[in-house]
Length: 292
Image (cartoon, rainbow, N blue to C red; front, side):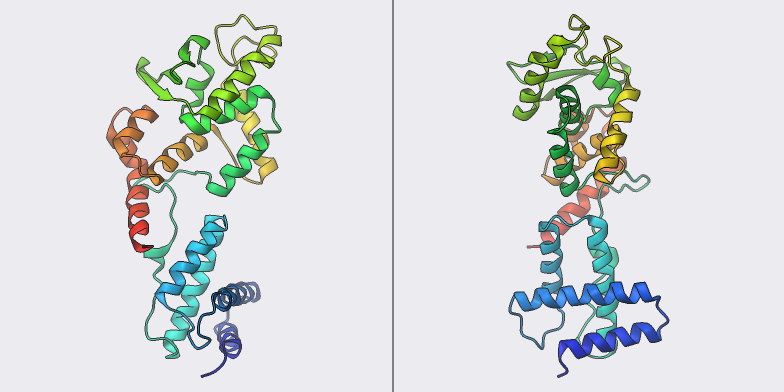
């Protein structure tokens, strides 16, 4: 059998003959070579070009490396083209890759799509928060780890937080109250802010938790502008609702029941949660089984 190097060269020539753009050819071939290098690292038989098992394990490897979803899907597309060509050339027995089935999807709904931060971006966001003021760090933690709306965030009063029970009481749409548990790191960020910047503020007597230099209550636009600045530093667009969607999506990925996510998010009914997140839930569960 031909060596993998020769086979990849043949694949490259075929792409050129098919009229693919130079950059496209370069991208496809580079992705295939990276896959081939992965097989060599795993000491896979040199005559084995591609199997379903090897493909799914490679995708899992890329995810574990923290690679962005868009990048993983691009590599998946390259390998799909490679797989089709190998099958056409009778170098493999079957087409193992199916984009509709295998494409990594985040928070897509039957009618709506929402933007979320992937795990790598969440980590980058958290590292950035360490460089921010105590107030802004708390804002980031509250949005990411409680899923509250920005309108709910700026209306939080100090009396809405019970540090003893680690509970935040939020007044949502229609005046409906809901309780959200607070993680230890959120409580720590809260403590640092209340004992630090909040004490020295000229609005230290304000009933509202978050104050600005000019007002006893932080304005939602200030939060949006700050997140836009953070996003530019991280190379991605970030807005308050993205962090809310990220909160819900991460809960579902970790196996939290849809009804619980709905209550924590303060959705009017379960259908609202389903509208945005049920397809993600189905996909994640299916992928979990496929990866066994």
